[in-house]
Structure formats: C-alpha cells, structure tokens
Length: 110
Image 1 (spheres, rainbow, N blue to C red):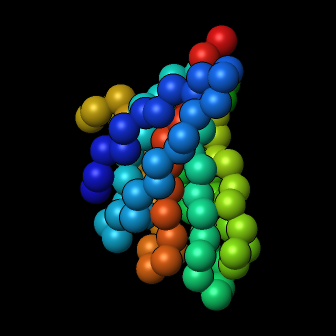
Image 2: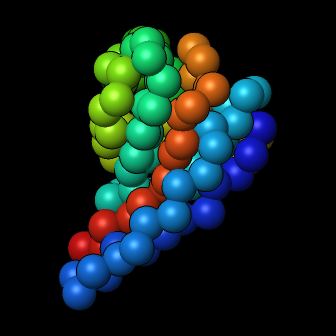
Image 3: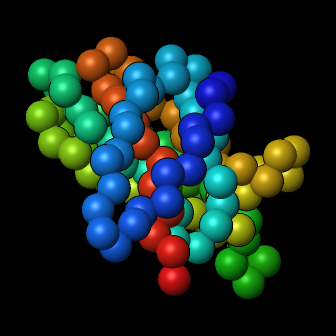
C-alpha cells in the first residue's frame, strides 16, 4: 500500500500530479479538506473503496464505495476521522482494478 503525498491546492492555480493507483491500494491523510482524485483511463468502471473504521452513535458505518466510470475523473472524500485506520491514522483505499487508473491526493485549505 503506497502513501500518497498530499498536494495543497493554491488559489492561484496548482499543477496536480497523478500517480498510478496502487495494485494493493493506497493510503491518504485523514484531514478536513483532503480528497482523492481518481482518473479512470480504462475502458470499464472501477470501484474505489475507502474502509470505514469509525462509528456513528456507536453503530458501524458501511465502507464508502464510489463507482468511477470509464474515462472519468472523480473526487472521493473528504476524509475525516471516520476513515482513520487505528494502526496509522490514514484512510485506506482499494481499487477493483488499477490498470490505467491514476490518483492524486489533494488538500483544499480552509
């Protein structure tokens, strides 16, 4: 699992750098305003699954699953403490397929 570096968005413009989606998944920081951009360059939809470890009023919450259509870029998040893994404090992200899928972790400062 690769830890994606957070790219802070600048109001004057930011060149976003995408990386190949990790075949065994990726991790992103759990901070308000942090998102994962997923660019699906493949010919089929890809499911992006973010493991939910938090609870809501003591009840478990389903994992976040986002379907990204072929040829589309989608934003997933923001990542809150609901997704923070107890071992490293990061959100753990998995992909149903990673070929021709690139990702970028971006942060919109408040």
